[in-house]
Image 1 (cartoon, rainbow, N blue to C red):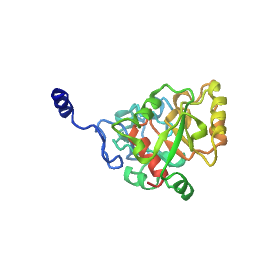
Image 2 (cartoon, one colour; image 1 turned 45 degrees about the vertical axis):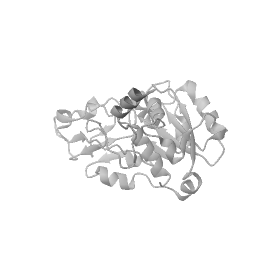
Image 3 (spheres, rainbow, N blue to C red; image 1 turned 45 degrees about the horizontal axis):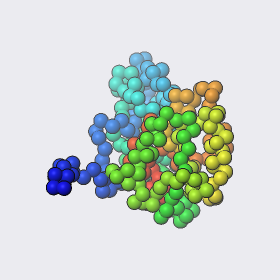
Image 4 (cartoon, one colour; image 1 turned 135 degrees about the vertical axis):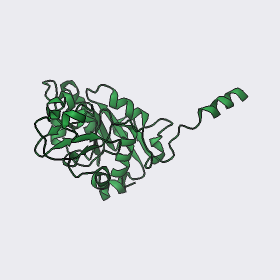
Length: 251
């Protein structure tokens, strides 16, 4: 028993005490920073982008499409695009995720997610979510799993995933929504009691990601149902997920 205690002491604490103030590894590729709006002749970042997330006039990066691969940094963008390590990327609308010159991580975090009174009143203290993997690669799904582990412990805020849509307050969608999952997604959402919220998690769920042009994708669900929260990333970091949900709840 004494040896076990010694080993545990050497491991230290992996628990993150304050998820809202937690920092992240400096190597993490997070919020895109745009330092100009007029690309020159050597700008090829938009051609290299696998998800067509970069527009030239004016220069902007759409985080809803971005897979954060980093191909657009450096010479490819003439130094106009670089990624910081800020992880709070969630937004309450697709338009807010379009990042151009002059938009900083600090400013973005202040306006990106505005909590609505109805959501705060109903779900501010307890939120049960049903996750649907609509053709995902399991990257986003693994990070959502991590949200509930001993490191991040999302449950301390009353936010938990549940096995049944009947017991859920909202749905978290991952994956680009393939044709063979579109019906299951609709049925899951319909089985949830109202009022209910929709969260799109990851580039694939938000925009289709690198699969956006595939003939096997059916995104009719997101076209007719407005999402309440968009969480960019490929995949999103657990701190990104949790802070986005907390902001939506007004916490």
